[in-house]
Length: 369
Image 1 (cartoon, rainbow, N blue to C red):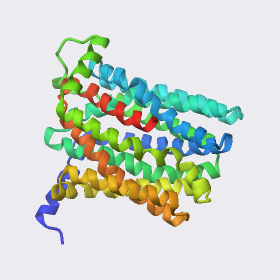
Image 2 (cartoon, one colour; image 1 turned 60 degrees about the vertical axis):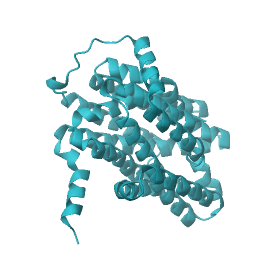
Image 3 (cartoon, rainbow, N blue to C red; image 1 turned 180 degrees about the horizontal axis):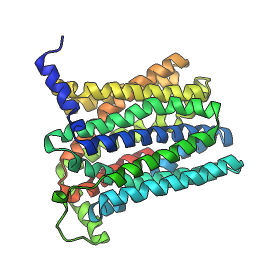
Image 4 (tube, rainbow, N blue to C red; image 1 turned 45 degrees about the vertical axis):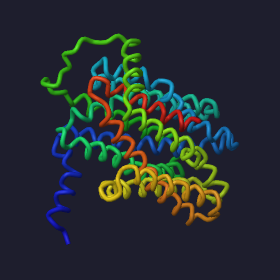
C-alpha cells in the first residue's frame, strides 16, 4: 500500500528529473557509461587472451585507475578555473578519438598487451580530467533541495550501466568481436559531446571571481582539503575501504575464467550482477541511512564486501559467483554513495572540483594499489 509519505519519498528521489538539462545530461552519460562498461569487459577479456598472468590482468585496472590518481588534482584545478562545460566537451571528443584509433588497431590485428594498456590509460586520463568537472556541475543543474537525490541518481546511472553494459559487452564481444564494442564506446562519448553542445549554463550562475593561476589553484585546493575536518575524515574512510575492497575488481576476469571456469559470458554476467546489486542498493540506501545512520551504513557495506570476497574466493560455482556479485554491488554502493555525499556536502562551490578531485585521487589511488 502506498502512503503519502512513500509518495513524497519517491517524488524527492526523482525530483532532479524535473530539470531538463539534468535529464538530458543524465541520459547521455547513462549511454556513455554503458559504453564504458562494455569497454571494461572487452579490455579485461582481451588481456586474458594476450597475456593471462594475474599481474598483466590486474594492470588493466591499474591503467584505468592510475591516470585518475595522477591527473585528478590538476583536473580539479582546471574544473574550478575554466568553463566546466567546455572542459567536459574537450575530454569527451578526445576520448572518442582515442577509441576510434584503438578500434582501427584492433581491426587490423596489431594490438599487443602493452598497446591495450596504453589505450586503457588514455581513456582513464580522459575520465580523470572529466570526473571532477562532472561532479562539480551537479549543483548548477538542479535546485539545492534536489542536490542529494541528483548525486544519488548519478550513482544510479553508473550502476544501471554496470548492470546493462557488461552483459551487452559480453554478447557483442562473442557475436561481433572486440572492435565492435570499442567502436560502440567511442560513439557514446559523442552522445555526451552533443548534449554538452546543446547545454548553455544559465547567465545568472556565471562566476564573477577573478580567475586563479593553475599552481595557486592546486595549492589552495590542497590547503582547504587538509584543513577541512569533514573532507579529511571522508578521505581516510575511503582509503581504509577501497585499498582492500578493490582486490576483486582487479582480478574479476581471472575469477570468472579460472576459479569459476567460465568464459566472457560469465564475466559479463557477474559484472551485471554487480550492477544489479548496486542499483538495488541505490534505492535502499536512503531508508537505511535514516534508520541506521551514515556510519552504520558504511560499516554494513564493509562487512558485506568482505563476505562477497570470501564467496568469490571459495564459492567455486558460477551460481555463487553471481550471488557474490549481487552482494558486492549492493555493499559497494552503500559505501561509495555515503562517502560521495559526504564529500560533496563538505565542499563550497569555489573549491568543489578540486576537493572532489582530491577525494577521487584517494579513491583511484587505492584502486591502483
